[in-house]
Length: 92
Image (cartoon, rainbow, N blue to C red; front, side, top):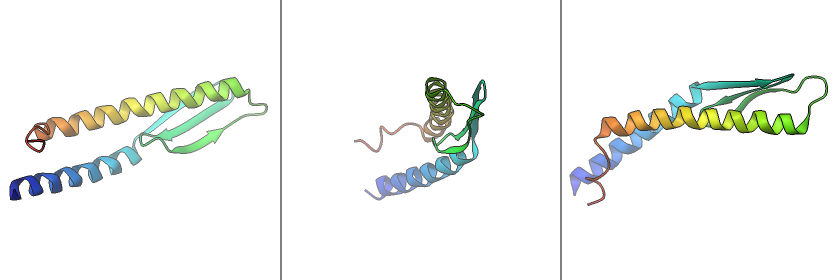
């Protein structure tokens, strides 16, 4: 029982560390005069619209930024989970 509590504590600690890493990872997507910078935790850091933003282009740029930030987050989580040896021990 104590081992599982210890594993849960370690998991929480690693999740907190991952969140801090994701805050630091920034993706940038640009199309025409529209540029968005987003953290890997999917928070918009900066949004530049240019002189006359096209709503379709803006939507596309934001969606691309979200997609790129998800890729970064997935890589970080995969490396974190690999270092833990999986969660199978916690689920038993």
